[in-house]
Amino acid sequence: MKRGAGIVLHISSLASGFGIGDLGPAAYQFADFLEKAGARCWQVLPLNPTRPEYGNCPYNSPSAFAGNTILISPEFLVRDGLLSWLDLKNPPGFPKDRTDYAQVHAYKEKLFDTAYENFKKLPDKSGYDRFCAENSEWLFDYALFLTLKRSLPARSWNQWSSDLRDRKPVILEKFREQFRPEMEKEQFLQWVFFAQWFALRDYCRSKGITIIGDIPIYLNFESAEVWSRPDLFKLDAEKKPTVVSGVPPDYFSKTGQLWGNPVYDWERRRESGYDWWIKRIGHNLRFFDYIRLDHFRGFVDYWEVPPGEKTAVNGKWMRGPGYEFFDRLFGRFPSLPLIAEDLGIISDEVRNLIGHYGFPGMKVLLFAFTEDLPRNPYAPHNHIPNCVLYTGTHDNNTARGWFESEASDAEKDRFCKYIGREIGVEEVSWELLRMALSSVANVAMAPMQDLLGLGQAARMNIPSVPDGNWEWRVLSEQLSPELAQKFCELVRIYNR
Image 1 (cartoon, rainbow, N blue to C red):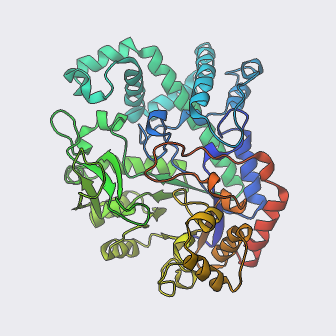
Image 2 (image 1 turned 30 degrees about the horizontal axis):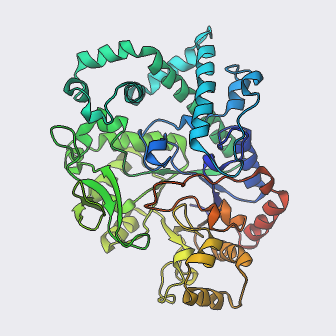
């Protein structure tokens, strides 16, 4: 990766008049802001669907391939003749600085119903037909799965009738016929999402902005892939997980993190040549210029926990696919622009694998000011060029929030000694930004909240807390020319 700087801001956190950030005008305005700020990179969170029942978490999705249609721009639906401006008249009184997901879903579903009815009247559906053909390997299963989840009384798919649970062809065809209109609506929305995303991606590329995406390693059990490809996962004969995912106790949690996702059956994946993962990586390379592989350690060894446990403490390490997996990926993609999310407890074996393939890892400045500061790998004087440096990530507090409510007195003292002066809380964010941009790290990234100097109320996510996350949004007036210029000056000074 070339030396540069960027900003972390998920699409849902953009400004808009429709309750949640979307792929409409505000996304293009943010790209313009990045250009003025001298930022070469825009990092987003996973773009896969989110569901309110799973805390609206983009890392806990019902699909590895589908897009999150709640991010579709209503304004662009009007532009494309699928809605009228009257359809957008008098939207609910959405909060501007947070997302009320229940309110947004209720509002947008009505718009989507109208847009779909207008779509059915179009004389030329060749673009839609082409999209369906190109994405047939996942699209129809996803549309059917989503429709069945909404229509059948069983709470979980593995409680459906055994014929449907086990995907008997005659039964599948029966339900495809029964729910054809509902499936077509979901396919239509995916078509719209993909078109809006690729248009935004192309606009960013025209501005010289690289988009960094994010692939969660695991999927929600209630996902189209676990139903349609149970061979990928460690499930029993009744399609129940025999083990679930998590991580042991670490910086983020004393009891570990019990994610609860089904775990991959890597032995069977090896026998198939990792075909599904090759398709997943290729799919995301169409979306993004670089991909952050979340929980990179899980590809070397992973923590699995017996089902029914209340915490992740009683898990055990298991062998992942390691070098063989990445050799196979490089065989398919000679240029593999991956970023290894290597935070937390990392073994020498993981470090050796990352070094072997030359993947950039991650550094986080908020982790730097511990008692072992002189040797701490997150401290600026210990950075290496081949890494992506963050002031903080979506799982951390904001820089100001960290200093105000999380950092110990000793950490605050080390921080002030490191920069050579005592400072107030309102200065912390920009001191960390300066520290990041002056580092030897090839890429320096910061959450938008840190450019704005916001406290912990603007935090994006608190790991292991199920509710109230992924809601923060930036206000359009906060993306001021003055802020862009202030950031751009540091970018120029530190040759980014």
